[in-house]
Amino acid sequence: MTDEPKKHRFLTTTQAAEELNVSPNQIRALLKTGELRAIQVGGRGLWRIGVNDLEDYIAEAYRHTGERIAAGELVDDVEPDAE
Image 1 (tube, one colour):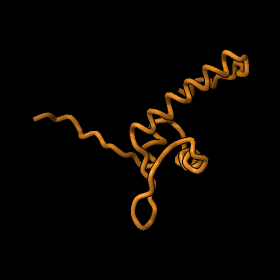
Image 2: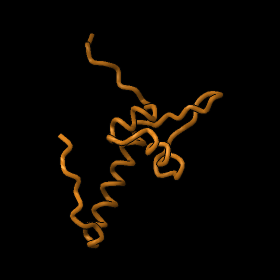
Image 3: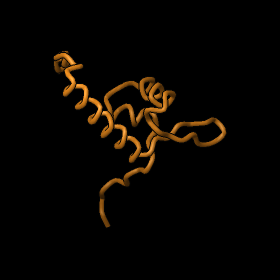
């Protein structure tokens, strides 16, 4: 037996927001635009984001960002560390 915590297949909007270090409202905006795939579960329509869907979103964001850098569309506006 392992003491490793069970990995969940689906995340809440709050959990997904924590993974991306953004607010849950930003996750809901991504769901609304269709940029991030998710499902609604139950009568109250709670959103659940598949771990693989979040990983796909991240990979696509890296690809898109790389294209924008290559095209010279991004300026050096990196946020300073908030430490």
